Image 1 (tube, helix red, strand yellow):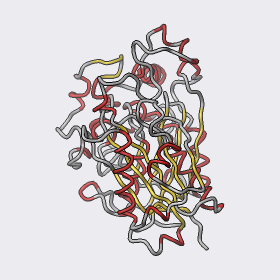
Image 2: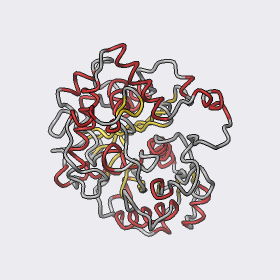
Image 3: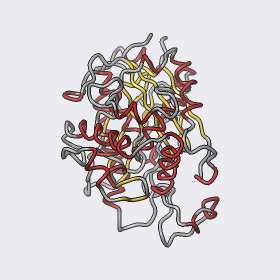
Image 4: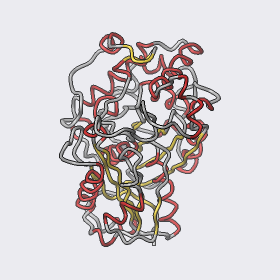
Amino acid sequence: MDRTPVIVGTGLSDYPVAPHLDGVQHHVQATQRALADAGIDKSTLDGYVGVGGSGGMMIDDAVTMAEYLRIDHRYIDGTMTGGSSFEFHVQHLAAAIREGLCDTAIVTYGSDQLSRMGRQLGTGGFQRPGQRVAGPIQYEAPYGNSLVGAYAMHAARHMHEFGTTSEQLAEIAVGVREYAMLNPHAMYRDPMTVDDVVSSRMIADPLHKLDCCAITDGGGAIIMTTAERARDLPQPPVYVLGAAGAQTHWNVSQQVDFTTSAGAKAGPVAFARAGLTPDDVDMLMFYDSFTITCLILLESLGFVPRGEGGPFIAEGHLKRGGRWPLNTDGGGLSSSHPGMRGIFLLIEAARQLRGQAGEAQVPDCQVALCAGSGGWLSCIGVAILGAEHP
């Protein structure tokens, strides 16, 4: 039996604004749509993987959602590494399917982050004013550091060491917006220029408002099974060619080097497992919580030498028609970012590899790389997906 792990179904819940759904309902709707896409019945699932998105409350963690969805599993995983959780999930599920720990499993996520704002405190693992501060972050909180402030420190250090400019970072946002304009569901679809980005309000120097991701609702699900079973299913299988993950820190005060990421560890392992190099990749799905996130992932994963990302991006290589088109669904910067976006990367990569991306389709897309980032560029998960198995 061919137990090569493949993705055979994907589903997105309503986004970017869905006040009619709560976080759990986003999980459910995405699950229903993924099952329909895969052409299978829920009763055939024997694996469940997920991570909660409802403000850190225990209402949509893995065990609770497995119960709610009534999935009779023999494999379950609730690994939580922030936005990169889902790339770690692909790595874990690929191994589980190969070893026979399960045959067909679903990964789900859902968040009503935008609709919930103002009704509850807390989102993900980040502190809000008035919350009790516990754990290692209590040693950072008195200094007033914020989520965007942590990424601003990365951008400032990269600019200091390598001469990276705000205009170069802005090119990332502009390129992603070009794809968002092709996505009727994207949060922001108006044309945007580099000048628009650098002229937008400063949020945390040197990051401007348009360097920062959207805040939305949304969720997603993917179904993974064996290549053997995929032969009887309606969608072209998307092969998991290689996957890996690594962590350098969690709290930003413990980060050693602000100009790189754990992608420098995870990337080479994922490429080795896939038997590929960056030159074999046709398109990129990077976690774009901020523009600087993409630049650091680009360099740390080996697509360009360290410190040379800024000029490379300014030449248009990540835009539509470029060497490595980036975030063809419009990304977190313009389309959707419901708190932990890593599952959106996998779903859009699958759409591209199936040749189902419409106007946004990357010509002859055979290999896609997904890189999720959790925390403050803390945990990086990498999944390399292919339209064919080598």
